[in-house]
Structures are given as C-alpha cells and as structure tokens.
Image (cartoon, rainbow, N blue to C red):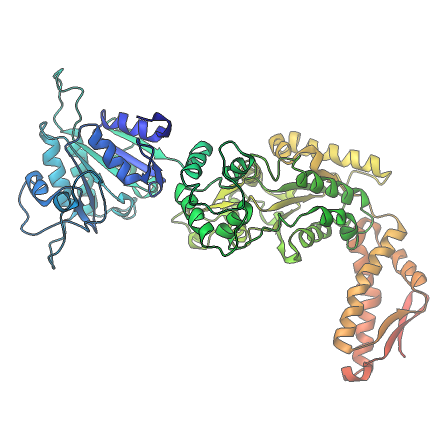
Length: 617
C-alpha cells in the first residue's frame, strides 16, 4: 500500500469508524481525493471502499431523493425490519462502488409510482440493524445538510428522526468479548457540505459521535493532483517535479479544489492557443486570458513616476515611494508576485498626511496605472463603519438576519471586480473590530462572506489613507514631516488601538507620508491641472476653440493667495469654484442662449484685481 497518498482525514475516518457509532463528515465532500491505491476518486467512493476494506459487510447510501443505493434489493430486504412492497432504490448510477458487478450489487428503479423511502423508514431499518451485533453495516446519509430545515425550528417529524438516530446509537449492542472487540460495529455516517444545517444537538458533546472535516487540498495535495493530471495539461511550461513552473502553478492554485485542478486541465486542452499557467488560471477564475498584473512589465514601470505626477502635484516623495514598492513587487523581492504568498493582496500601502494633499488622488491615479481604469479604485469611507457591528456591512449579515441575501459591500465589490484597488479612506475612524477583517485580508488574502462564500483578494491592491497626526504636526522640511507622521501612525496603532499586528502586516516601509501644501508653485500646478478638464468641457459642450487668460500666471497667483493652505489641494478647488467656475457659469447663462453662438470662438479671462470677467473673441 502506498501511504504517500493517504490524506489525514482518511486516516482519521478509518480510525474513528472502528471506534464510534456515528460520524459526521463535513467540508469539501464533493471533491476528488487520493484513494489508498493512489488514484483520484470521488470522496463518497473512497469512503465506501475504505469501509468495506475495514470489514463492513455492506455500505448503504441513502438520500431523500435518491433512496437507497450500494446494496442489492435482496440485501436491503434482508436488512429491513418489515418488508416494503415496492422498490425504494435511487438511481443506480449514483454510486459506482467499483468492485462488484453493477447488475448484481445496485438495484434498479424501473417501476413507476414507487413508494418513497422516508427518513423515518430508513432510520427504522438502521435502528434495527444497529441493535443486532451480528450485523456490520455502515449507513451513509448523503447530503444530510439538506435533510433538516431551520435547526432552530425543527418540525415534529424532524425531531422524531433525531430521536430515532439518538436511540439507535445509544442503545446499540456493545461487544465486550475479546474476539469481537477489534471488529467493526454497525455505523451511521452523515455526509454534509457544512455543519450549519445539521442540528448540533445531534452530535455536540456526544462521545458516540466523531466529527471529521475534509479541508481544501493543501500545497502538497495540489502538487500531487497536478502531477497526476500533468499528461492532460496542455500549457507552455513543462510541469516537471520540483521545477519552478510546478512551484508557481501550485501557488497559483491556492484555494482550489482537486476538481478545480481537473477543470483547469480540461480547459487547457480546449484553447486554440497554448496558454501559460498564469493566463490559464486567470481565464478559469475570471474569464480573462491575461491578468493586468502580467501586463506590469519593465517598460511600463519605467514611466510610473511621470504618469502619476500628471495628476498628483507636489508629492514627489510619496510618488517615489510608491514607485519603489511597485518595482519591488515586479522583481519578486517583496513577496507579492512570485512567492508562496501569492494568495495575499499584491500590495498594501498606508498614505498618511494632511487633508487635501493628494492621498485619494494618488490612489485613483494608481488604479488607472495598474488596471487601465480609474473606476477600478473602489473607495470605502471608513467613517461610515465606526460602530461595533459595521463589519457586517463589509462581509454581509449572517444567516437569519436582515440583508443576508445581499452579501457584503466589500466582498461583493471584489467578487464583481477582482482586479481592483481597494481604497479605505480615513481608516482611523473605523471601529477597531473592522481592523480584524483587514488582518485576515492581509494575512490570508481571503474573506468569507455571510453566505459562506470565500472571496479571494489575491489580485487586489490595497491602500489605506489617514489624517493621523495632521492636527499636531507643523509644516517643516519634508524629512521632518515624514518622520513625525510615521511616528504618529506607529503610536496610534500600538498605543491607542493596540493593534500593532495590523501595522506589521502592512509593513512600516509601506507607510507613505504626504507633505503639507504650503508652496505657491505647487498650488498653482494643482490649479492648472484642474483647469484642463474645464477647458475640455467647454470644448465638448460649447464647441469653443480655446479658453485662455490675459495673464495666466498672475491670475493663478491671485487665486492661490485666497487658498486656505490647511485645506491643501481641496482648498484650491474651493477657490476655483467660487471665484472662477461660478462667475463663468453666470456669464454663459446670461450671454449665450445657444451653443452654436460660441462655435470656433474663444473665451478670454480678464482680471480686475481679485475679480474675473470674461470676453468672447
């Protein structure tokens, strides 16, 4: 026997099947797994073969829809306490036990209008068999999570089934003779995808029961599955044992079932062009042949700083820091792209600084740069999540609560748009309980929503913003301001929130301070940037030829002089709106009735002191 392929859950299952009178097998039960012979098989078949190998005379499967399978009709009739006049067998193809001829071991269901085998009748047979020590039968209740309704409001019939089950295992005959002690006893096995729909009163604190959970395949099991299917895969790389391609593929399939890997193999053969592993996984998971992260190449990264500076003014130090982090990710030295932690978000940055200095603007620019679309920046205002149960808004309400069907705002957003930049604005205003969710995202790269669905964050980029320390720190040199903001952030997380582990997950090197906006030239550059969309809007709507100032530098200086520099770039926009945009709107409304009147003409801004007037030329 090749023990290399035996999973821990199977060893535990076989051990407990010889000790207990009932087992609850839950978790990843619909997957494929390795049997003792090293072959990939459905888990229900592995369970049946293992029980037979341990000495059980029969393994009887039952479901409310399929009836009984796994034994012949004659064998079932021998087990019944009283005879049923019509067949109670389900589809003969439900379970192929593999060792006996299907014509003799599996009953057919050819008669119409047959009597349905109710749970009450099935458990009555199981009860009789378990009372008699000469029988060694394993009764497997398949899809038992569908057998019961709301566990907090069971019907009379459901409570009666629980009593039947409990009585069967409690009053089953106990073998104490030395010759019988090592032989199997009749057994009840409940197969369910999740324990939430199985009444806990059935198995909790009950020594007659054992719980066995089948986890998602781990790294070594995924590698074995890929190796077993490597002749099916049609990819650009050679999936040789211990090769870099194999290591990368195993990492990319984190969170996948063996069936997912099997589906990947099938998908690879259906493609007209042979894909590489990264694109194959991207196509399977998201329906996209190429991940935006794969497009993050050397030539694109060389232009990062210039691209970001087009929109973010006066924060060269922050942009340089972001550029270094992206380069570190691209070269694989940050543990973000090609490491065993590929399941975690591609990056996590913490922008800290005064209000209105470009933190949000840089996040949007980064989303545009990485994903080609500013809308890929999904913003969450954390001041809206400042109460204890606000985490339910992010991941969804638990079953039975209002809004359960809607899911969570965060998990829904990532599910709908896996390639995105998640912007958590003013993180210091969130309730501390929310921070536990961020710990899970940064550590495991996944969240489970209220409906039980696991959402991967492996292709997201996360940005936190904060004003921590902005009210106490005075403008000074960029180096001093940077040091003071970093110190304020560390003090806040370690002393006030008592969550230093979150800062550790983000990484102190990823705390990026922003400078104060107290330089007139920087503010004028911001104003120029804001005037560009204004001119474009006028051209689109009014078909003007140009929008220009008599003396642009003088006009911008006049506007900047009126800016409250504590409000940074946001103050520039406020002044522009009040002193330029609103007067321009009044002028157009009063002087121009039809857009055609301005076609191919220009609007000139005339300055008189601090006031601006307009002329059509």
